[in-house]
Image (cartoon, rainbow, N blue to C red; front, side, top):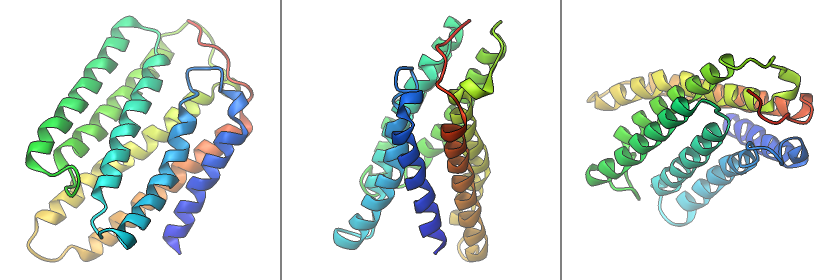
Length: 218
């Protein structure tokens, strides 16, 4: 039941992303609709993969994580005006990709969790989104939230990553234990679900409430 609620919210966010695409389709935010559609699609493919091929569906979510990273980094990069901050985004993306390649020597991309890359992935995304916020604050133009869907979208992604980072660290600690931790794992899983719901509710709010997104200005 709880999982169905999360999946339903993700699907609703994807539908809103398509319906209100005109609000941001002519801006650098346009690939965001791909991310909105990818989230529930990956969940559904993961379920199908577990039921029909093998229970271990890490390949589905490892692929999703990689594509999510590339697309979100591109969107963030395109929304940053400062050249030095753009270079930082590129560096963080390179670190992300290199870590993935290194991690694949230790864990199988198809069946492994890719723990090292997952940790770097979360950290670099938080840093990149923080760099975007700094870039906005450095601008002389007045921020109009009503016409700034990117700010709401990135805030949603940042909210989830900030909540998920301690969940990930705690989860890895539990895995290292020889026994116990089942209750904590359940709590962590539920908190992660709440974070996903909060993120998507913010997306839906932004898509419905905001006006057509303005072009980037210094």
